[in-house]
Length: 451
Image (cartoon, rainbow, N blue to C red):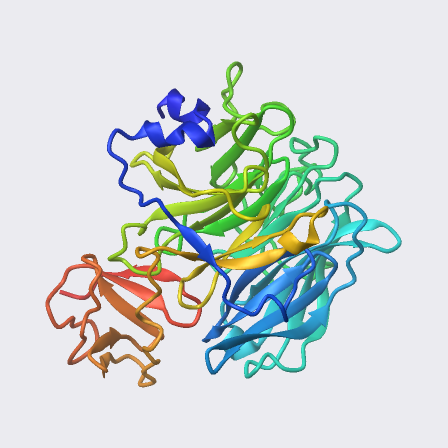
């Protein structure tokens, strides 16, 4: 990786590429009546499976709400609350993540920092009716562990493999302590239970079976990995890791690797054999509190397609970056949006692939809002109208758009929807490789038809 890309600050990053290809000029808009709807320090905004006209919003104090669109107007509706207690901005509720099979099993998961008898990081399993998300009820605590340090905030996402991943902050620079889950990305199977646990350890977890090492650990060496996400096409995992004294990081996380927190901040300079460098390491004079984001995959015809969009709480800016071919750095990175009206606390998506920015300022409550990002190239997903075809093992035609029995919309690599006809594995135009987008979860996979 070009070391200059690692050391340029966010504000100077536009000069990395001689000819910038990532669009700029992204603006923001309100999508609800701010005179009637308000939020108290939102930390998460995300989609509801199967319903592109709903959003989930998590507020730091533990309240979880639904933003429901009816007749073109969004209303805020209370959903449920968790037992979070907020003392400082390190405490609170962080994330809601739906099970990949939510429409079948009705399960979802909540991550928060609980402060009752002892400070704990908690992942709970809940259940709700898929229609209107009615009757939410807590099923069980999947995992909890003491968090006595301040950087306990984190995120969780289901990976393409169906396992639940969670990024956890450190406890007094504990990212290298292999007997604890602080400062790690962990990976568990919530659909099974090992003896004495409410979850199972996946067989290929990198440290499973090693004495003195927590088997849940997937990757090591993080300080405050505030937001994580998977590229819906490639499965690549991105983590935005908030810096300490010198640097902010965006990491491409892989199994068993060590990203240095507790020993190295930013790009490693000496004794680096066991450490993996970040995709970008930004001086805290340029970036201050990177929050992470998502790779844009809503519309393959967009100029943002494949671009990682992420924010920075301190600079109030949103950036776009493109992963290079070697996957060890960004080939291009630009500021795509000017200063936002508040501190960006999270980026989120709805079921159509529209982007949202949640923001709050503890000292300025009126700046606590959620905005929808706006740009001609931030196109919504054209596949949301495609319905699942229910005949097992067959493909077919619905409204001239391709789909398969799993509820996938089918794209060609040129970004155009394919029309399927005939029997299984027979694309109408004979294309070699197709892209499948799950219409319920938004996840994407590649499909190679039979010859």
